[in-house]
Length: 374
Image 1: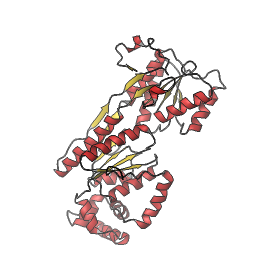
Image 2: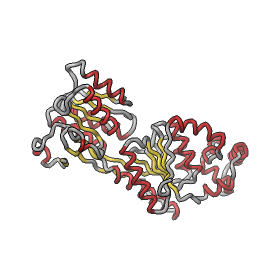
Image 3: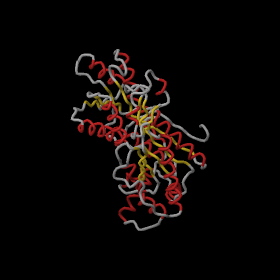
Image 4: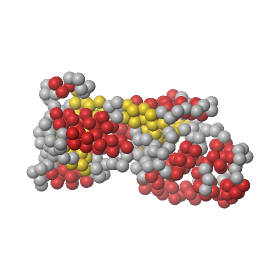
């Protein structure tokens, strides 16, 4: 517990074990009742609160599920009537990624200043872990949820149908009518790859992972569009999940004369792995292979050479998401309907030396391009 913020940050293995144990030891959730009865959370609410019409057959199934699970109707009534705890939830893929760490810091600061705690968990990019985390948060009676989502699942749909406000961060929540705050991934990737082309690099590799998620897929699309317009062949490594995988890719370049002369990295974790692998293999940066990473980080200017990177406004991204969430929480209290909101934040290319730029060589490129040198 720090500044009123509870942080149950657990490993993927621990979370899976927790899920097995929780089914045996923790109180059943609204989601459990709805799932067993084969109905929505709203139907459970109507049965528990004796409000609204529910067909006799469904009512019977809900009551049977409550009895079988040992669910306490008084707790259900309190939760489903809207008496929420002064706590919001935040689900991110990985707290080890500095980008998500900065987003989380912004979310919890905003919430804390308004008298709310933030329950932060990491899904480890695992949809099953995310489901168990959503179940846990429903049981904790959260007032709202900010989430960097995996593919949509029944738990998120159940959460949405229960009336708990949700805001998607970094990635849209497909098939759910929720607010979302994202960045211009497509435009940022285009700018980065165009800058490498401006230097004269014609063999540009694209390296990363999470290709099935919106943000990464948009960056890959931007990379491909620029190369297609330049009549160049894409060279994509989109399943580089680990440092070993990145090392093997870079090592393979030692054995070919047709190796890349530049790299576009899809996120900062991959960027650091690529930089390490290039040095391990003896490639000089940027003389032999240049690199631009998507997402800047605090140590990037201190590297040798300093890293050129696409900077995302991580703090603003988190602030905008939690601001939208609190707007939804307040409007729900007042029974006000609001249209879905989508915010797309701009990114900027921070030009340093890893792309091949020196103090003067990119001066012409800067004119009219909105590129920020450091």
